[in-house]
Image (tube, rainbow, N blue to C red; front, side, top):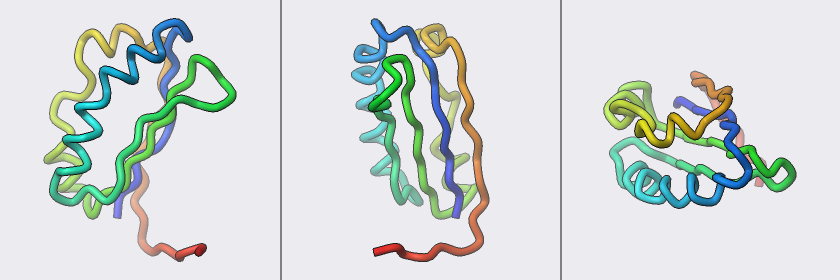
Length: 95
């Protein structure tokens, strides 16, 4: 399993429009083969932060979906980013 997690920083005044622009990406990802979960969401505390969380069956599934990444317009709106991929060997349910 692969987890992609981290955050993006955008101008707080642009965060809502950035997220609206991500709706189609989230819908496509959730339909993609190997996608277990995919979320791009506003942070509850920091008005300029956007949280990223993805869970995939395999690295191949991530790469098949990833393509070229954010659009040029979205990339221009990002002032900072810290997103990483994690290979997961095992998982334990907490519920």
